[in-house]
Image (cartoon, rainbow, N blue to C red; front, side, top):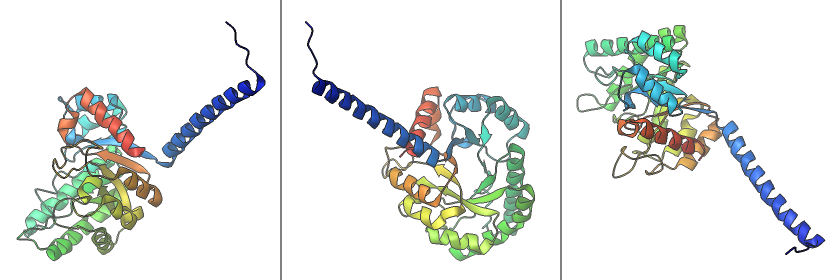
Length: 296
């Protein structure tokens, strides 16, 4: 049976279809604009890759999961890392100094501090070789033997020793906020960088670590343009860091809005536990969740 459609019904149906199409187009435009606005590239910290195998196998799995970069540890075999980077097309987002916990720049023993500086210098050389623009550094540790003021003064002195090489190589030293009882407020981070007084020193902002002290989004306006890199990490009150993105306490929309407002563009590096990247499916899930984080 054929039903006639009068002009009014036709226009009404056409208008509805047009509105739906316009809404879909507008949503796509918003999503596209959001992508353009947030120039954040997706990487993963090498030390958290749970996928088995050598450097090549790990980086191949990371590439297949949709990552664009990796954060190698310092003091790895340079040629092996370079070979894997070249083969996969991944970029070195940063280099994590591998000696800053064992040989902190705040240590009471001058010999240990010197070894810590040598470790930082090697990390800078590694970063230059890999094409990374910064080195992640934990500046020191406050404990019973090292009060806050001593940690501050010693680490400033030691970091300054590495600034000339950082300037020569064109690689920044990026200080990370961690659970070391040192720098628990963003204002302290600014004070610390001001004390070093070098444009070659910035901040590697760890979103998950900050939440222990105050909401992560409140750090971003204070740190502002000093943010060199990001560690993208989820945190939950009960399971700590053993939670997946969007299953913890981070306020991702507020965090991303704050990053937009300071104009952050650069690398967002996952530092979630290796249990979340132990196989191809886990790596893919981690990668896709990071996409959702960046789109929040």
